Length: 98
Image 1: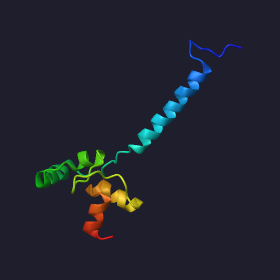
Image 2: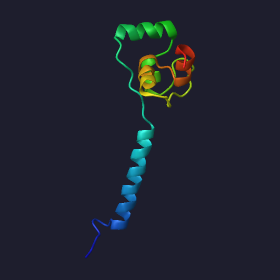
Image 3: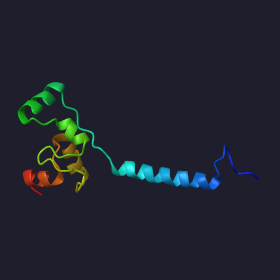
């Protein structure tokens, strides 16, 4: 029985599937947060007041306060706060207390 299809062997296919699995895992590890909704007027006011685009920082996983990466949070509430304020875990702890 010939397991070739258009020149691709079954062994090659298993390598492709394994690489796709690795790629999917790396995409999951690159999760980018989705900012909470604020009106366009509010977003413009925040940018005018701070000089920082909250939405761009949050989707890039960057803290709006300290500018460092914001990827690890201690709980779901802290992750939600990040989507609201853009504060990483350290800045949340320093601002709101642990």
